[in-house]
Image (cartoon, rainbow, N blue to C red):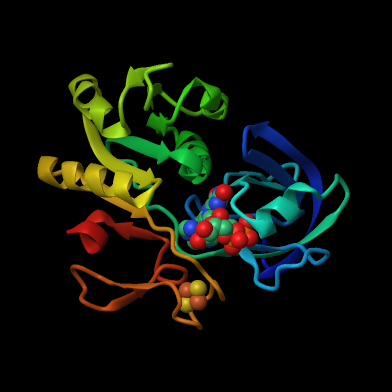
Length: 256
Ligand SMILES: Cc1cc2nc3c(=O)[nH]c(=O)nc-3n(C[C@H](O)[C@H](O)[C@H](O)COP(=O)(O)OP(=O)(O)OC[C@H]3O[C@@H](n4cnc5c(N)ncnc54)[C@H](O)[C@@H]3O)c2cc1C
Ligand code: FES
């Protein structure tokens, strides 16, 4: 996608399970890095600001971009009401994605709707011939639909559920000893709730494994102008803009 602003046409807009929906947009020139995001505006909706969503997948042959979104409030509810053929204004792709250096095995970890950008990251790694190990942390077995997205891309897949209704009972971090026992992991990339990323990032740092995290902050402009999404970098000691300097950062910069 050369231009920063495009009009996408909805090809699919469907519920996956509960409050999670998938939207596929036709965008003929689409090209994005894994970990980048787009700002969507539903011109027929009532919300003024664009809403940010991670790139969940790209199909360059078909010219399609997928986002997977949770019904959080008014903007996402209005998005979910749009029908096939409706138009959406797409700004992006924005931000800096994951570093996909392929010297050694990569573990991708997604939690909740943070699993969405992990799909495209798995896709990108598989395209480079470096199929990742994937760990998904979800609430219960009703969220197993996420697994389907990784069938083509993952070398091995682990799942944890809070209630033990599928996979390993517990949080994503509870699966780490078994994964590190089985695989020689050199890189970890995480997207999920902050509390989950913090525990996993600190675990990776203790083990000396290179780790990147994808941050989420409320965003207004998405392009580094409003300063609404900043945090104090732990290593750089500078104000980091999640939208323009991230959303992907080294774990030490966020949680060090
Ligand atoms: C870089 C980035 C990537 C994202 N990727 C995805 C994605 O792939 N899929 C997805 O479902 N969501 C994603 N989000 C979150 C998504 O942007 C918000 O859920 C959405 O903007 C909510 O809009 P709304 O109008 O429905 O809700 P609002 O009415 O604006 O808010 C509803 C509730 O959601 C909370 N909320 C809104 N925005 C955020 C946010 N950015 N972070 C935390 N809480 C928020 C509000 O505090 C409020 O409690 C991403 C956010 C960022 C910053
Ligand atoms: S959202 Fe405006 S600077 Fe990041």
